[in-house]
Structure formats: C-alpha cells, structure tokens
Amino acid sequence: MLTFIGLGLYDERSITVEGREALRSADRVFAEFYTSRLVGADVADLEAAHGVDVEVRDREGVERDPEPILAAAEAGDAAFLTAGDTMISTTHADLRLRAESRGIDTRVIHGVTAQSAASSLTGLQNYRFGKAVTLPFPYAHGGEDVPGSVIETIEANRERGLHTVVYLDIKVGTGPSGPDPDHEEYMTADHAAGLLADGWRDELAVVVARAGSPDAVVAADRLSVLAEREFGDPLHLLVIPGDLHHVEAEALVGLAGAPESILEE
Amino acid sequence: MLTFIGLGLYDERSITVEGREALRSADRVFAEFYTSRLVGADVADLEAAHGVDVEVRDREGVERDPEPILAAAEAGDAAFLTAGDTMISTTHADLRLRAESRGIDTRVIHGVTAQSAASSLTGLQNYRFGKAVTLPFPYAHGGEDVPGSVIETIEANRERGLHTVVYLDIKVGTGPSGPDPDHEEYMTADHAAGLLADGWRDELAVVVARAGSPDAVVAADRLSVLAEREFGDPLHLLVIPGDLHHVEAEALVGLAGAPESILEE
Image (cartoon, rainbow over all chains, first blue to last red; front, side, top):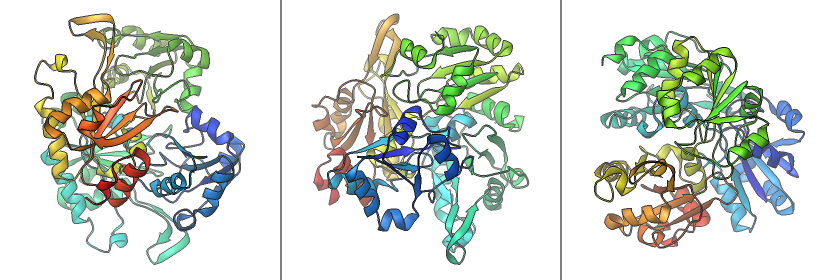
C-alpha cells in the first residue's frame, strides 16, 4: 500500500487528523521537499511530532530511482509526504501510476493547497480565478525578466474578468550555475512585484505571505508600491485581480489594506 | 476572537490538527451546513470526536442575524465551522469583515477544498484549470436544462486548452417550491452528465465522487456513458478536460478508467 499524504501549508500541525493517523501507522515514511517545503517545521520536527522516521528523497530519488519506495509499498504500508497536496501538480502522478501498474494499492490523503489559501485569505472568490502561472527567476528561464507566457496568461484571464494566482519560483538543490545541494532560494513577493511593475506599474495586486501560518500576511496595493515593501519569511505568492465584485473589493480594503479608491472603480 | 475553521471534505478527521486544537479550545462553536456538508459525519459525530457543543446556524442565522456569533467572539474565543474551507467562496467574507470592523481579531484555519481534490484525484494539473462553474438544478434557475453561462465558461476554457471543474448543485433548506427545512438534495454526477450530454454526447468528462473519503471514486468516460452509470452517495462533481498532456491522459486511463483511445488524441 502506498499512501500519498499532503502535509498542508505550514508546520507539523497543518496535516489533517486522518493524514496523521495514516502517517503514524505506516511501516516506512518517505518525503520530498524539492517541489515545496514546510516553512514552520523541518524533518526533525515532523519526526518528533509524529513519532516516525522520515526518509527524505531528492528529485532523482523519486523520479529516476523510485524502486526503494515501490518495494517498501509492496512489502508493507509506505507513506509518501509532500508539502501542500501530494498530487496537485501531477508531479507524483507518475509514481502513483507505477505503483498501480505493479498491483500496489494507492491512496491520496489530501492537504491544504496554496491555491485554496490564496482565495480564502484574499476574499477573492474561487469561482473567479482563471489559469494560474509560475513566475520563474530570470536566470532560470534565460530570457527577459517576465516570460511572455506569464503576461499572456494574466491578460487572457483579465479579458474574462478573472483573477490570476502567480506562484513564485522555488529553487532547492539547483542554483544559477546548475545542481547545488545547498542551494535554497525563494522568490519574494516584492521582487516579483518589481518584475511585473515594469509593464504594470499601477495595477492592483495582492501579496499572500506565509499562507496557512499563524502570521500570514495579505497586502493589496499597486504593483509599484508592493515592490518597495517587505513581507518577511517565505513562502510568498501574488494574486493579480481581474474584475472585482463589490464584496471582493470590500474584502481587499478591509482585510488586505487596499486603497479605498478601488471601491469606486 | 473569531476563528474560521475549515472542516475539510469528508468526516470529523478531515480537519487539520491545528484546526482541531483551535476548535477544542474555543469557548463557543458555531457551524453552518447550508453551503456544503460533511457526508461522513453529522453534528453529533463532530461533537463526540472533538468534545465540544456545536451550535448550527441556518443561512438566516449567519447572514441576517450574525449578532450572536459576533457577541460570542467579542466575549471570548468563538469558532465558526464549515465543510471545506470557510472562506473559499467569499460566502463568509461578510461575517469576517463585520467582526474586523468591530475590532474583533479574526483568523482562518484552512480546510481541504473540493477544487484541490478534483485536481489531485484526477491527475489533471492544477495549473491547467480555468474558471470553475456550478451546474444548478433546472428548477433552481428556471431556464433550459443547462444555463448558457455554464456552456460559455466550459467553451471559453477549452479554447485555451483548460480544464473546467463543474460543481453540482446542493439544495439544503430550499426545495422546488421554496423554503423547506427538511429538503436536502444533491445533484448526482450521472444526472449532470445527462444534462451536459445533450450538447456534448461524445465529450470526455471525469466524475469525482466523495472526494476526500476513503471510498472516493474517479471515473473518466464520454458524457453519454457516464450518464448511464451510478456513483453512489454524494458529494459528486464533474471535470470537463481541455487539452491533455501525455501524463494527464495516462493518469485518466490508469487511475480513472478512461478509454485508451484518449492516449492517441
């Protein structure tokens, strides 16, 4: 049996009660933190809180050499942990398909995702979000500051009045000059706002910092203003609103400090 | 203090560990189940599992008469519970804004949402979903079988190659002939597939039944085929895929029983 368990967004208590029970009863526990990580807990915290040994795998150890994980799932109950929800970006769908094709039962125990939190914390309605994008570090795509595909997605959403979640790049284990096990870099929201402000100086945007943590910050303002602020520890993301319903505009003013002028727009 | 706590998708164990701690330490606990509900647990189950008294409010008691909730949050620690995530559709943003404007601290402890689970269980990538829609019961919108706005949204997403989550109508406390406290009706996925198959007989769709539960079902097939099947207890939703990446098509075949012909399309 292979159970994929989402750890949720922040620390060892962001997992669901059901997930914790499955984790505690597993014979072996694997985890990866290269797609995302928990900012409020490290591996030792997880091990101590749940009374388990956690075997952390890098990308190579999941995607190219999944055999030890599959063998453990064949021999007993194996759990595979990630931050957020394990399956949300199909990153691990391949591992699940491999297990199924070997006759290993699989199950997903969901975790809270940044996508849900972005809607929930900003007061922007989940129905009114279009396709999401990721803003990469300029060095990671080797092109201009903001890839054309990011701008096209935001504009296509706005033509339909829809909001866009902009995930910010995470580089763990790979730096500007290639593989580097010690490299850990998270794009900050002010940096991202600065990149986007080049074309959209006066556009409204919403920063969500540390979603799911007790000190989550939500701040709405013009991109050029957000670019000059600081939002503390990662993880950050941005939302670029489309058309705003009245309740959404009120939420941005009341909960995120947006300029009151947006109520008249 | 007013803490909004998402219960997640299925039963009393779908809440996060953090949510459970906040719930247990609250002085008073309010809940509403008219926007959604937990299929695997009733109020008595929640009360027994968490050792609290839960005061359930109907829509009127939240939206028109929030005073008792606000007064409790002013006098001590009040928790407000919903299925999924409390803030995901801005339904309760108004309550949060009222509290904040009275100087009451508020906090959101997130729950797993159907939106996340739809992506996670189907293997369809969360980045490749467009705007979501809700398919209402025909009697609830008084028009044709499928409202034009639903069709337009699905088509606008597909033009961009994007998937669409189709939430299915829930009617609790309101029936075909108006308010009715005993009315409880959940649109099933086969019913929804039948409505949509009128225009899109051969289109591929994916049923997700009981997301977040131990017996979640995921089934991919043509709409006209899905319309003839049965998927058991609620809640159900549908996903109408846009363009499929190869891994997504493999996931639909391997995890959802889609016809293998989609691998060649």
